[in-house]
Length: 354
Picture: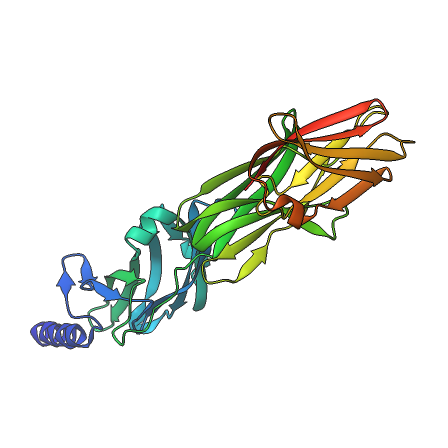
């Protein structure tokens, strides 16, 4: 009778072995062969897909990856003990077993942008424990199932992109400015660039009407942070407003947020004078004058390096923006001195005409 019971138990074990959900048995249980996929891998017990890849909001050098897990537990799937997620350029993240319940779970990974884009791979190690009860032999059998999954964010078999790992055309990290002895110093930083031809730096006295004061060349395509600087050497007095106009090679453009920079008011005996853009091409530039309170008239003169006056104009009003006549300046090339005189107050500026 004992022999019959033993043989019966062995037969049940054999049947159980045949019915196990995986095809490789190791000494410590069932061990899945490595599973490779693109954006999604699906098994009866565990499915993983890449839900999104976006720039990190906190660090421009990083990307934020979101993985979505669909977990089935119970029966032949058992109970998941641990799930470890790791991507190229990042640290492993463990999904706490207390958080693992039936249904979808999110895991967020932060990776170094440059490392991940060079080798866009995500590795998943999961461990589930299945308990089988053999009532005739009155014993329990615990079987461990190990999942080794690799997700690759390349192309799926059909040739369609799995998921776009494409940063924003130009991802601006910051744009800021401050007053210095040389003028207004502007700084900005990009986290990534695609098709970036140049930045047009624009300035306004009222925050509504802007004029271009400079062009700064972009870096085309880049996935690494790039710093830009520009000094407005002929700033306006009081509060000025600045913005960037980012222009693609293909023509589209976008504006940055507007920043306001306040300079100390000029004293009662000085003139502030600026020309934008400077260098001035083909005479297409604008003159801005802020002069002492109470002054009625300002004489503006443009002189060559020998001191010869090549252009002259009288300007009324305390604060003026003057459109210089292109037909008079377009024929002039080289370095000139622009001066503004109002009573005893005099201001000089160097101007390059191209």
